[in-house]
Length: 188
Image 1: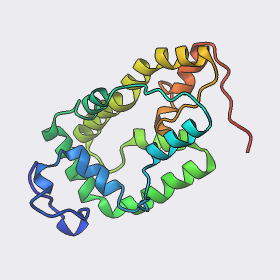
Image 2 (image 1 turned 120 degrees about the horizontal axis):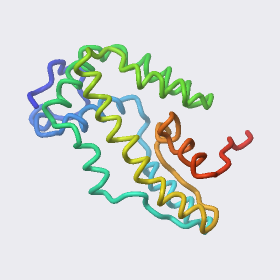
Image 3 (image 1 turned 90 degrees about the vertical axis):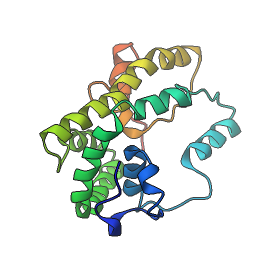
Image 4 (image 1 turned 90 degrees about the horizontal axis):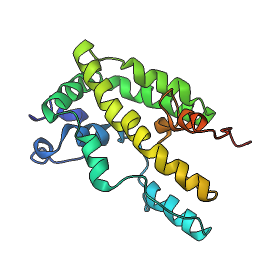
């Protein structure tokens, strides 16, 4: 990947470091610019919370499987999507506010629909993003469902996944319904 086209919009990384990063890393850094840094990452916080309550903690995949999903689209193709996202980076703040609104109100289908729409991408980049989405969400959900169903059969289990894994026709909630589980939101 070549250096960024919009240096003023890049994350707080030194210019020599950026060309060595995979495009998905750069995109994640850019998308996370508005997040508030915390002393303990969310994954670690959730794991500690579960362990303190005596809940079983099991990973649904290995680190190698997760990295393979992130790398399923070649870097030069990821770079095309990143370039188009950078060209519209002024829209990110508005998109982040909409997405946070969806999350806060529990409207994950609206968030999912916005992700599917691939706003700001041309046809080629949207197709690449759809392929990446299949690798990151749908394929992993299909791989996780048998393991998740087995864990649920053993006893109650607390599951923490990214919110977009839950929604949509290939989401974990629909998959669990197809496996015969009753799925309903927890009352507020």
